[in-house]
Length: 143
Image: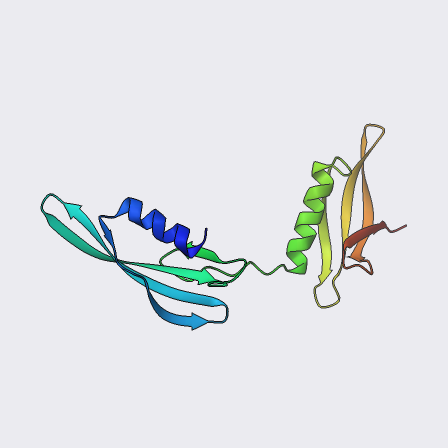
């Protein structure tokens, strides 16, 4: 949604929408407020709507209608990557389950146990997890 789209959406919700006023700029984000008025019987109720616009006026412009600054994308931690990786292996049927017994976040390595189905029998396998040269998680069975 662009800034123009957001203002048009506000115009469908409110009786009057005043021209937004730039309040501040933080990096590529501009914070605006716009006075809006609801018509209730013969009276107008005044309010303020705040919104943020990223890349204002240029390609990739995106408007966020929120009472606060858009939250930054969550940072991915090594632990979060491990959880996603193990979950994807369970979903894909590669393993039945697993758990991590040791994590070194600074070196991005971990040891754990993978539970695999071998001909109908659940077997625990020791695994070492680290990242390949492309930065992707990989696992190796430890003898």
